[in-house]
Amino acid sequence: MQSSLSLSLSPHTSLTIPRPNQSSFATSAKPINLRFCGLRREALGDFSPLLTRRVHLNSITAHRRSAADLVVSASFSGGNGSPPKSFDYDLLIIGAGVGGHGAALHAVEKGLKTGIIEGDVVGGTCVNRGCVPSKALLAVSGRMRELQSEHHLKALGLQVSAAGYDRQGVADHANNLASKIRNNLTNSMKAIGVDILTGVGTILGPQKVKVGSDKVVTAQNIIIATGSVPFVPKGIEVDGKTVITSDHALKLESVPDWIAIVGSGYIGLEFSDVYTALGSEVTFIEALDQLMPGFDPEIGKLAQRVLINPRKIDYHTGVFATKITPAKDGKPVIIELIDAKTKEPKDTLEVDAALIATGRAPFTQGLGLENVNVATQRGFVPVDERMRVIDANGNLVPHLFCIGDANGKMMLAHAASAQGISVVEQVTGRDHVLNHLSIPAACFTHPEISMVGLTEPQAREKAEKEGFEVSIAKTSFKANTKALAENEGEGLAKLIYRPDSGEILGVHIFGLHAADLIHEASNAIALGTRIQDIKLAVHAHPTLSEVLDELFKSAKVKAQVASPGVSRKYSRPSIRRDQHISDSTERKNRLQEQANFSRTVGAKIFYNLVSWFLSFVRVLQRYLYS
Image 1 (tube, rainbow, N blue to C red):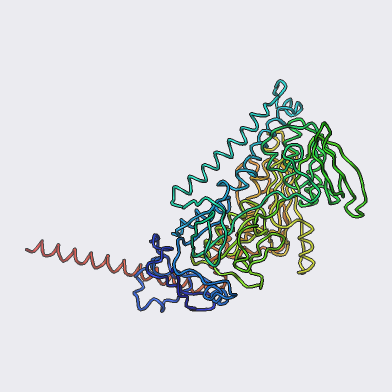
Image 2: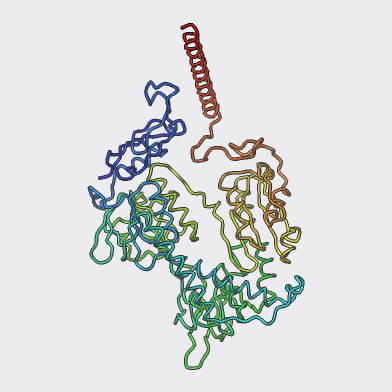
C-alpha cells in the first residue's frame, strides 16, 4: 500500500515521508531546495552553511495542506468500504479526453504510474466531436468569406473568380484533422508509458474501478474525466439527418438551404458562421431576450452588428422550441415556438433542417458513483475548489477527483486540462487551487470573440457588494496598423478594472485573431499582474498585440503601487506565486539569509584563493633555494 505519514511542522507547512518503495517518486531524482518549502534550518540538523540544503524527492516532499485536509486524507468514513492494501496505479483516470490526457502527461512527469480508461475513442468530445473538427470547418468558412468578399479583395488589389467548395472535401478535412490529433494524443501517452485501458470505467468502491465487463484495477487516486454530451431539451426529436446536434453537424453530410439553430451561444454562433459561408440561410431561436446572452453586452451588440445583421440570418428571441419534428415523407422540419414567459403559442417554422445547440450535459451515468455515496446535481459531480469529489453527506471522498465538463465548473477543454494538472499537483504533494477567472474562452467566428474574467455587469455587481469602483477602458482595431494592413479594422477590445488598485477584472475582445490576443490578459490575471506594471511591457510593432498594449496604456489607475512581488525596475513577476511568499518579514528574512550565504561563500572562496597563493609562494621559494 502506497501511503505516507504527514507531520505538521507549522500552520502552513508539512513534511511528507513516503514509504521507501513508493512508486510515486521512485523515478524522480530532482532535488528541491527546502528554503523555499518553509522548513527552518534547524529541521535539517547542524549542517554547514556551505552545504547545499537539498534532499531528493524520493526521500522528502514538502507541501502545504491544511490540517482539515490531512484529516480527510488520513481517514475514511461514511461506510463506503475499505480501500485496497496495494494498488495497480498511482493515478487512474476515467476518460481520455483533453482533460484526462493533460492530467496523464503531467502525472508521468511527476513520476506517477498512470493508467487511463477510455470507453469510446481517445480525445473525447473536443478532438472527435467538438473543438478540433469545428475549427477545420471554420477554417474553410474563413477562406470562403475572404474569397466571397469582393469589396475586401478589391481594397487589397486582388481579383478572384467565383469561389466554390466541395462538401465532401470539406467534411474530409474535418475528419482527417480529428483523426490526426487523436493519433497524436494516443501516441503521446503510449510514448511515456501511460497504460490505455479500453472499456467503460465503473467505480466499484474506494480506489477500485472496473474496466469493461470483468477487469478490476486499483489506484491510489482516481480522476473522473468523462466529459459531456449534447443536451437535447424535451419535445425535440433528433434523427441525425434533418434534426441534428453538433455531433452530427461536424460530419457535414449536407448543407441545407435553410437551417434553424436553437441556441445562440458559442456552438450556435460558430455553426452559423460555417453554414452562411457555405450558402445556407440561418434562423436563430433563442430563449432569452437577446442573442449571445453569455457575452459581455457591449461586445455582444457589436458582434451582432457584424456577425448577424449583414448575413443571411434572422432570429426569434424570447421563445422556446417546444416541439421539433424531423422532415419525412416530403414534409419539412416543423418547429413549434412558444413565448418564453407566458408559454403561449408564438409561431411555427418550417425549415430544411434544425441544429440543436442548447449546450451540453455531463456524461456521468453508469459511473458507479452510488458505490462511494456520491449523488450528482443535475448530472454534475459535486466538487470543491480542489476538484475533490463531495459525497451525499457533504464530506470529501478521499482519493477521488472530478475534472472538466463532468463537474460543470467551466465547460471548456483547456479548463479540464488545467483542472487535471491541478489535481496531479495535489496528489504529488503540492497544494494548488486553480483560478477559474483567469481561464480564457473564445468563439472562433470571423472575426473572433474572446474573453477572460468578469463581464461589465458581473464586475459592477461585485463592486457594489464589496464597495469598490469599476472603470472601463476601450480601444479599437481601427487604430491598429496590422489590422488596417489586413483590411480588418472592425473590432473592439474592452478592459474592466479597478482604478484604485489596477486589478484586472475582465478583458473582452472582438476582432481579428481575438482568440490569440486574449492570453496576455489571462496570464496577467493568473499571475496577479496589475495594470500599472503591464503598461511597461513592450510589444513588437506593427502587430495585433498592440491592441492590448494600447488598451492597458489607456487605463487610468490612481495607485502607482507595483503588483505584489513585482520589481518596478525590471517589471517582472517574482518567484512562483504558489510558494506563498506574501509576508514581508519572511521575504526580508530570506533575502538576509541569501545575503549571509553569499557573503559566507565569498569569504570561503577568498580564503581558498589566498591559501592557494601562499602555498604557491612556499613551493616557489623551496624551488629557488634548493
